[in-house]
Length: 114
Length: 168
Image 1 (cartoon, each protein chain N blue to C red):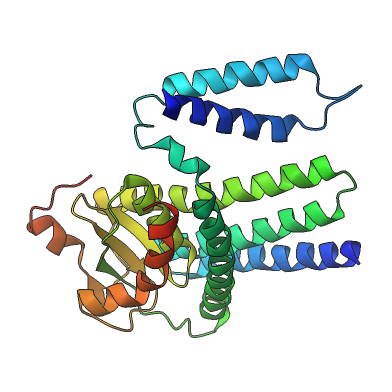
Image 2 (image 1 turned 90 degrees about the vertical axis):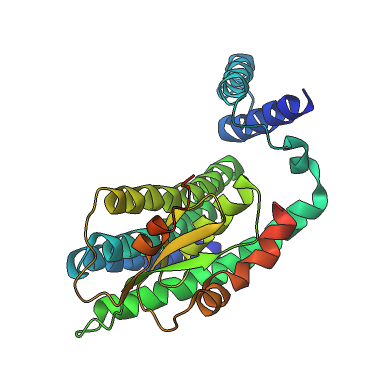
């Protein structure tokens, strides 16, 4: 049962990773690409780790996979945030089809940045 | 002092979980010793930025809400992925991206970090910037509503209640 479920998790995880990569190629600008990069790849990787935790024979391996899962869950969005902020601060423009950009409004208010 | 002891214990616990199992041919006393050294170094290096009350880590009520939150978050993460997958694979790529502002009433740095990271992991939103006065700039792949109140309700509303119980 758990080996069957683990294999399914691997396959679904790999599928999400693939969608993430397609998104990286297809989507128009840095910010949209980061969306695909963080969401699909985070879930894909987490599912693969979860599948590994189920398939592994030793409880210690499962514990390690579970801890890696938590680390990915914390670090992936943090890295995406750092990249997006870095891009915006260095003036990388939004895709021309974007509908709204309230970044400048905040800067003009003189809001102190943390 | 209490903060540092707690931080040390948490670091050591993570280390022990990573080197587990113990016994012949696997982890032994040297590994535990290395863990003690690593945890001590971490506490020394992190001294400046671990000023928030670390003893909150020991509160079981917070852990309970964290476990509940993990399930809620998992639901939104799956939804986020199906949403992004749909937009990416659709031939016409139906996206209406933009950067919007949301406001949070969460005060602590840890709570705001958790919120910003949760926003990034959930449907169509990516935190770009957190300002000192509690506003988060969010890149939204499909802007459907405008106005800070309504956008906040849409993006932040579903997490704030949980996070205020975990890290508030």
